[in-house]
Length: 299
Image 1 (spheres, helix red, strand yellow):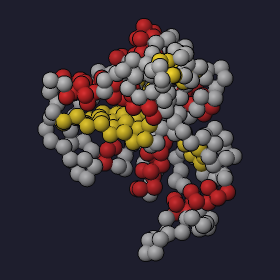
Image 2 (cartoon, helix red, strand yellow):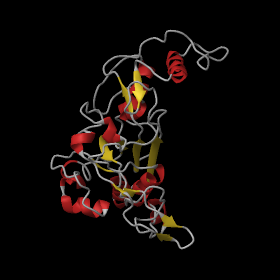
Image 3 (cartoon, helix red, strand yellow):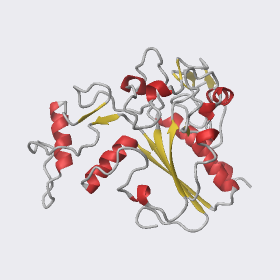
Image 4 (cartoon, helix red, strand yellow):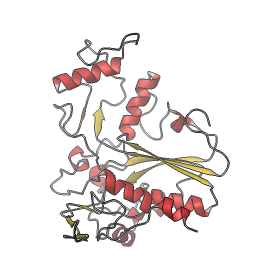
């Protein structure tokens, strides 16, 4: 399968990317850095790295005309955490037909309530093509049920659709795409087996749940901020220019949907259940959940 990953018959690969918000000028390659700054100097024997120089300059100055992290264009970094932007998922050895499109939980209010444990206000979208992060667990179970012997999940933490596109531009020296799966890296271009691309929602069940470690009990089930995904604010795709940056980082006062952290995200991916932030392998009430790898090893 080339240098990206080598597999054998009967294997299924799933790649997901958990995100932070990056906004950059669309359709143009990054401009040349004006000058090399401290921290951007190449090591002895290395060729000058234009991208590193740009980043070093932006860090030093606190701003950059070519892009910014977060919802404040005048600051280079105003947000450096996860976001509610839709996240890319790539599969090899199977498709997303069982979870995306008309199978999406976001098309059905009953399934949304089961997914979040509450109504997930503003999340119903009868035209949703995207699916949920918990469906990555479903895909792994579907692969196992189909007799796949090797099931591999790659999670690229901190690399969403925008950072992938930015990296592809840097790697290839060209702006080859502005939407969709993209091209430039092996995981985007490989077609040696059945493969698919889609987008998932990562919002947790809630944020702000308090727990008593000594009593092993959740003190305020439901937390302080509920999860969900409002397509009118977050966008129909990861590259939707209409997306509200304030909504994506949980700062929209009219629709403050909770933004996931790594613990809740990992629980969704591997246990198939949404939970509260800071929770690993437990549900919203603190009950233990069994991750997919342990399920697969049961007699």
